[in-house]
Each structure stands twice: as structure tokens, then as C-alpha cells.
Image 1 (cartoon, rainbow, N blue to C red):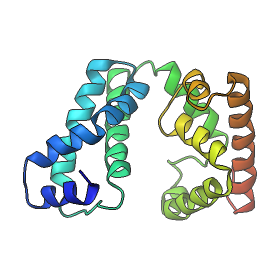
Image 2: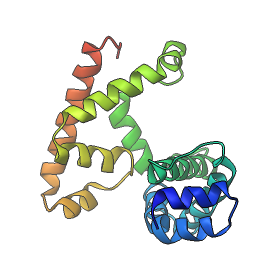
Image 3: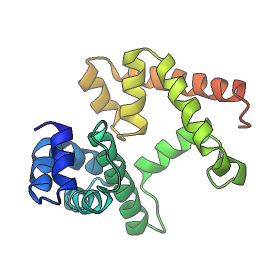
Image 4: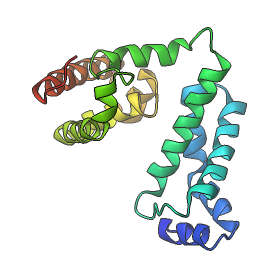
Length: 186
């Protein structure tokens, strides 16, 4: 079923919207949550919580044009929240590594000017990602949005792990230089 029709079902408060959403995107959402939490039960809970949050968010939001991105953001935030709650004293090494890699490129979110400039930063990031080749952009997003492992990315795109690592390192350096050029203090 097309995304627009699924969203229409949400607007009509038809519970089959959740079934259609699960059929179309459930596997991807569960995979996203699993990549972050590394626990299947928690991933399934995040997937189910995503449907609940989507049910409450549609309406007033109308994500007809970007339903998967809308759902993926909810799932990702839920998974990160669960990860934080489950490991308050000891962060997951996997997420800590990803955070450390990007901390060198992106200003700290706790900084007041950063919160004020969040929209401008998002636009700058989108412009940067738009300037990358399709393969680099996909690799970067798979690593830092979907939290895929280097091994999984290499297998997905039929390239070596060393090439993935090199590509990510170069992209982070390019991102750092791009943000400095855009006026961000790193």
C-alpha cells in the first residue's frame, strides 16, 4: 500500500493503518532499533512503541511524503532512549564509538547557540550530504543514522571494510572542514 493511503488511514483513525505500516516498514524499523540496542526484544518493543507514537502524532502531522523517515526518526529516538535508560552508568561501546566519531565534527548540542541554530545546522548537514556522491552519502547515513556496523555496510555495498573505514574517515574530515567554512566553531 502506498504511504499516502496509509497516512489517510491514520487520519481516518482506522486501526488497519498500523497493520499496513507494520507490513511495509516493520522489518526495517526493527532492524534500525536492533542496530542501536543490540537486543531483539528491545528492538521489537521500540517497533511497537513507534506505531503507538505514530498513531498519536498523525494527525496533526501529515508525513505522506516521508512516512518511512517519520517512523525511522521515532524508532531511532525510542531506541536511543531505551539504550540510555538501560545503561545509565555504562554506555554501550557501540553507540559511544559512533558518538565520539561525530563529536569531532558537530558542535555540542548542549551549547545554547547550537540549540538556537539547530535548523541552520540541519540545513548545513543536508547540504553537505547532498554534495557527497551517492555511495559516500549512503555509507555515511548507514553508519551514523542507522548505526550499521562497518562489516554490515561493507557487505551491503560489496566493498571492503577498509574502504568503508577510509570513506567514513574522509567524510568526517570533509564534514568538519565544511562546518568550519559555514562558521561553526568546533
